[in-house]
Structure formats: structure tokens, C-alpha cells
Length: 89
Image 1: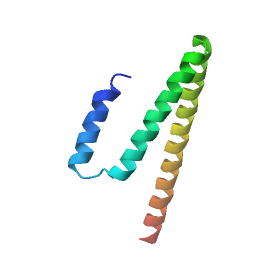
Image 2 (image 1 turned 60 degrees about the horizontal axis):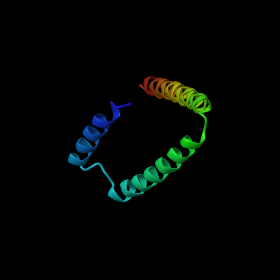
Image 3 (image 1 turned 180 degrees about the vertical axis):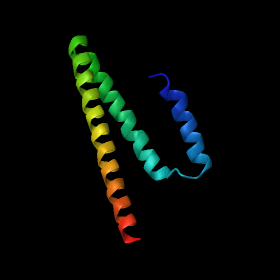
């Protein structure tokens, strides 16, 4: 997970340089992220380590399924739009 720190900093720099950051939204995201981190840290300290590992594993599985579903949906939509474009020619 330590990889995400430099990757995030580079992404922020590149997006800032390209003027792609909406600072009103960014401020809200930062606030919600800090509050969520504090709540998550508090809850994690109250949950048994074995349960926490299990919950985190379930969370990762859900995220993976969501990613696969999104990828497949985008692939199907791209195929449909390609088929429509080729049939119009």
C-alpha cells in the first residue's frame, strides 16, 4: 500500500499542472476522507484482528467483483458502439 503515496502525489502534481483539479470538490473530498479515516481507525481499533482481516478480505472481494463487472460492461458497450458505427458505413 506504500506504493499509493508516491503514485498519488505524482497524479496530483500532473492533474494540477494540467488544471484538471476542481478545488471546491477537492476540499470536500479531503474533508470526507479525513473524517472517514478517523472513523475507520476508531472502528478498526475496536474490532478483533481476525474479524478485521475477514471483513477486509470480503471488502476486497466486493471491490474486485465490481471492477470485473465494470470492465465487462464497458467492453460490451464498446462492442455495441463499434457495431453501430460499422453498420452505418
